[in-house]
Amino acid sequence: IEDINQYKGLEIHQYFLTLPGVPLLSTHFEIHQKTGKYLEELVLENMMFFRLDPDLSNTYFSKTKAWGEKVEFKAGKYLIAHNVREKFLEVGSRIAPQKVLVYAPKGEHVVGFTNKDMLVTTVYEKTFGEHESIKSLDPVFLIFTDDSVTVDALEDLKDIRF
Image (cartoon, rainbow, N blue to C red; front, top):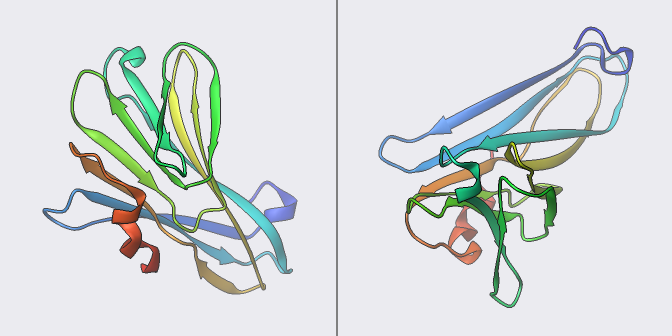
């Protein structure tokens, strides 16, 4: 960052990792803190835009409530923004079986957002650090599947760090 005085000297790198044959994408930020001062509570937004069908109104995002009930939010029509406490949401299409599961086990919070033009998930992450430090933030996982998956099935991903 060069033009915002408060963050001048800060470098933000985003990495994407996959394994051949595994329907999973992991993304994480690496922060190089060179601002000359202690960085206090930087909030990063990891925004992901989805269009799983040419007709956005066939697309949805959903969350599962604590007692197991699935709540679905239709895209492409109304303005909807929903904070997902479980840090796990599904993006899918009513036309095709493929889904993208977004899982941010250590994220500050996850928001699903849609309006008539887009469907976006945003993972918010907070960080801080000393000058001249390098810090890797926790990964966000995108799982590509035709099957229904519960957040409990993803428990092992919580321990992955880069």
